[in-house]
Amino acid sequence: MAVSVAVDEPGILLEGPHWDGHTGTLLYVDIIGRKAHRWDPVTGQKDTVAMDCMVGAIVPRESGGVVVAAGTNFAFLDFETSQLTTVATVEQHTPTNRFNDGKCDAAGRFWAGTMPEIVATVDQAGRQGSLYCLHTDHTVTKAFNETGISNGLAWTSDNSIMYYIDSLQYSVDAFDFDLPTGTLTNRRKVVNFDLSTDVVPDGMCIDTDGKLWVAMFGKGQVLQVDPETGTHLRSVKIPADQTTSCCFGGPNLDILYVTTANVGLSAEAVQQKPQSGCLFQVTGLGTTGTPGMCYKG
Image (cartoon, rainbow, N blue to C red; front, side, top):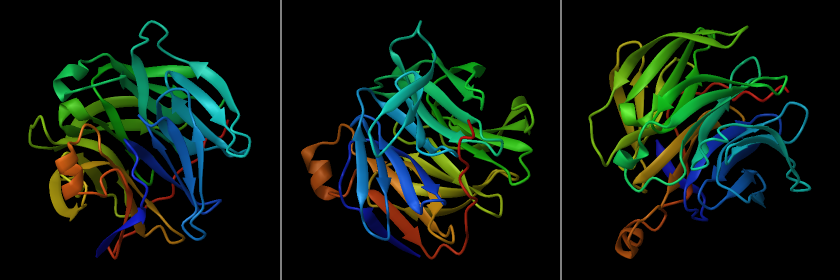
């Protein structure tokens, strides 16, 4: 196994990596930096679009371009023209909220959750967020509310289970998932983490063996866990404490890309770990991931 820097350009809060298999590029965002990125690992070219609000998630759109969850809007984004077209808006009554992590399911719906716009400490997050679904007809439904910090999403290969992380629950939860309707039922905890105000589960992805890979914010690691037994299997150390999310990418889906942040770090902390806020890659894990889905609306 080898860990190295993929893009040596530190952001403030990199998040939401998504491998676009159709273009062979990695999509990711800088939430606080208000930027959407598209990076080609073969050519090294990185395209960036500056946003006028915080952007929490990005996924490719089947008909071209990408979809972002930015501020409290779902919007289409064209990297070539930088044109942003709002599709739907949520939470007009909660202007201090913003979208955070999000992903598409196999039916092409885009799921994304909200949280307070600025959280200085985990305790300040409260429970004012919700999880939303942007359907392929551009309508939006709320799956549930009272979330703290809405984060990682993943689905089993047969689409019967959706995994979800609310960072304030210090766990991975599972739902029975109905793919035709997108209905969630029977919520239960399947993986627990040690309670800590400094280390919280953040974004995640799933491999072809059904194991989850969870970025642990504050600990500089990605944990592989078994959602069927709740067991912590192995840890991948990243030379940046604020690990935020991960996804499998590359032509064979065998490279684990890991986003990191440097939010509120002291000059001394940055000096000790100068690659904080960079995009990392992990090779030689001996496992592969499942393809990321695109939005079909």
